[in-house]
Image 1: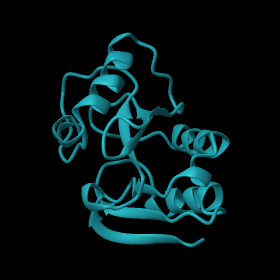
Image 2 (image 1 turned 30 degrees about the horizontal axis):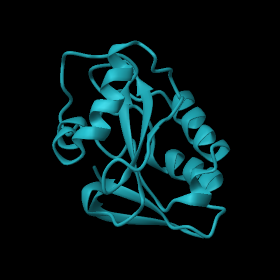
Image 3 (image 1 turned 60 degrees about the vertical axis):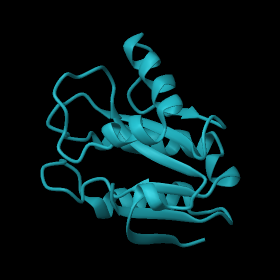
Length: 150
């Protein structure tokens, strides 16, 4: 299956699983265009699940946290930064996507994946992220969207 590039916001995707980039630990400074604020409003139960784990310090870099079946969408939280300026860590992105594949999420869900690096100052190249997503998650019959707006 081809990984589709879309300009639609992640919130309007009809994919089963939304992938949301997050900090490893609780950071006081909020990001510009950071999806957590929107997530807390649209998916409060899933957000609460992730937030309790984050507050407890059990979030590990590159290890996805999946909130399944609590609301209209399943959510995959990928901890890929510790930096309040939103500079993503490419090794953590690779690990998170590889872990998603090992969890076989691409076999059970259509996936909406944010185009990490598309916004200025994120510290990674979105074409590199696209290649990783395509290699690891694009091999199933399920749709994968690479979303330019998140």
